[in-house]
Structures are given as structure tokens and as C-alpha cells.
Length: 285
Image (cartoon, rainbow, N blue to C red; front, side, top):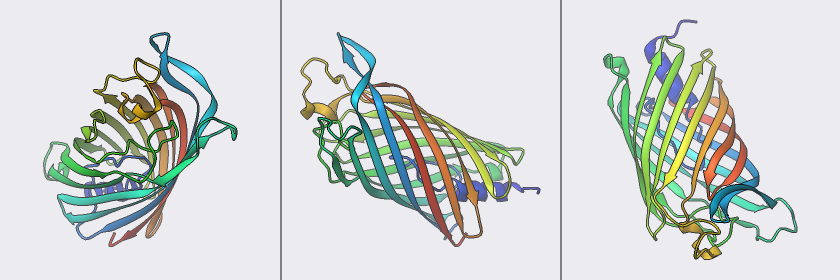
């Protein structure tokens, strides 16, 4: 089936709507004006190793009790105009030791809420340049304890700002990239993040995706470094590199997606593997 550029852009906007990460991610492929997408996602992740200071050096070591976390996220996007879209995400999470006799308590609560707006100032369908956009998001801290390795967030309000670029090639392949900064209060270190995405539009019903994501921190505290106690966990410099693979199937008014994540390197971070599934319902698509 031949895809026109407009159909490709709208298909990407619809099929990439599911939110399957803890933080909202931006896209240049915005929903049509007046269109709304509502998503529920379930994420299951676990780790048996983590990166921390051992003998003065950052090391990757086994973590006997293990960590596991499940999250249920609700998100939505709304097309305000051809060039403007609103997004929001909230949910709940529970984290615990994989070993029921592990030393850390099971913690649960409401995750950080994220509300953002994306403005696309260049549209590939109107010229030869790629689509380009900026996204501004507000972070509202959730309801959870932060003083344990099983904490589900950093416990601070903040904001994030990113720039996004993307383009569809030959009506089949779409490439995009995002670079941004995440700033929180309460002395939580500032984070810089980069996402590189590739999407194969296999058919009008199926999009296959791959992503490389990294996060860097301007913090200087480390787990088991000088002056470390569990009460400074929100202030350590958490960094990681992560890859993911997945796909989304589109039906008449809804989509289903499945995605796998793997953390490949880190600093003060758990070596998580994760599986995320999502269901998205579209109105005005």
C-alpha cells in the first residue's frame, strides 16, 4: 500500500502515542487538530546488579536482594493545532526487593506527574527540512518515600525542556532525535538526556521501533562514596545508557504496543531490564 507523506506523519503520531517510559518523551509527529489519544501502560522491570562506588571506583556488582518494580501509567495527548500539542502523564508504581527477605522496604505511591506542550516550528510536509519542535514540560512530584533504594522517584518538582527533530524517508523509515534538560528543585542534580529513535513503517497497521537513550547528571555524589547515607539518595548523580526495541499494532480506533528495555551502562543506577505493554484509544483520529 502506498503511503502519502501526510498519512505517514499522522500514522506515526498515532502509533507512537503510547507512553512506555517513566518520563514523557517528545515527538515531532503531532496528532491532528482536535484528536485525542488516551493510553494505559504497564511496565515491569527488575535488576540483579547495579553501579556504585567500590574501593573508590564506580563498579558494576551483583546486588543480592535484587530490585523489581511495576508501574501503571496513564497518559494522553491532544492536538491543539497543526503545530501545537498537549501531553500529560501520571500513574502509580511499586518497588521492592526480589528476595522477600531483602533489607529494603516495599514502597509504592503516585509517580511524578508530567504535563507538557510541544510546538512544531518546522514541518517536513511543507518544505525540504526535517520536522523540528520544542517541548516544555512541568514535573509535579509524586507521593512516595525517597530514602531507600526502592524509592520510585527523586521527590521534587521541576521542569524539562527539549528540542526534537525528525523526518520520514521514502514513506517507510522515520528517524528522530531529542536532546533536553530536566531541572528539579530541592538540590536534585540537573539531568541532560538524549534519545535517538528509528522507526520502520512496516504497514499501515504496524510500526517497529528501536531507541538509544542516555541520561547524564551534573551531580557529584555517589552511592557508597564520601558522606553517603540513604538520606542523600535523591541527590546522587544517576546516569545510564539504555536501548529498547518494540512494535505497535494499529486497529480501527485503538493501538496495542509492546516494548523491551535494557540498561547497558550506568552510574549510581540499577542494571534494569524491562517489558512494557500499552493500550491506546484514539478519539477524532
